[in-house]
Image (tube, rainbow, N blue to C red; front, side, top):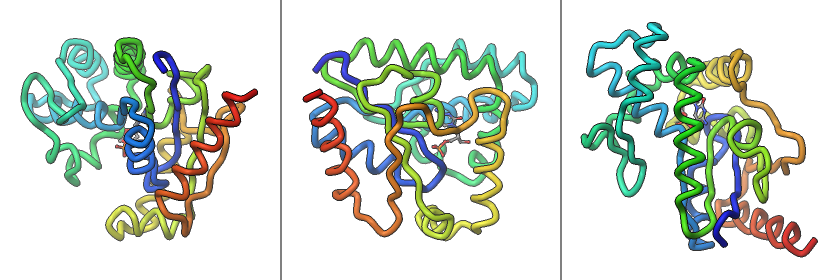
Length: 209
Ligand code: DC
């Protein structure tokens, strides 16, 4: 299945990471969590004392760092798997993800990564169906109620989740939006297995066309 790509976008807490990972396992495909890449760049910026609002310095850092996401998230050889999920990074990552040069560098890496895989790939993020792989084999937009999404994010205040949604979907560069041709799946009250099963059905339908 070299070349086949399932692209998944959706807001925080919609179930993207868990669904994408489980789906990739079920299909025997590779999986890429692109949010982890923006988070890893943020970790490196903060640890080097680079101001996340200094567009030029950030862009330079994003093009030069060595990043891996599997089996562990590393930046310049340092394991940052745990650090990328801290509150400090949650707060700083939006500014990094809003930087157009950082995005260009990440998009290029994401395309190169997919092209290097021997099996199909499942890629999840915010701009995967719209910018990175608009011609993916299958495009999925996951969503869920605000209440359920805040619960999934460790009971994060719904107002804080809503604020991040607002930032992600109204930013100038590659805002989160439903791509044309994307299948929308509401994951509220549904198990991971149910959602993965529905996506595999969509994939089979797509292939039999
Ligand atoms: O999915 P996540 O919470 O790990 O994403 C972290 C941040 O990166 C979040 O602010 C959205 C942003 N992001 C993005 O802008 N584009 C992507 N493809 C993936 C994540």
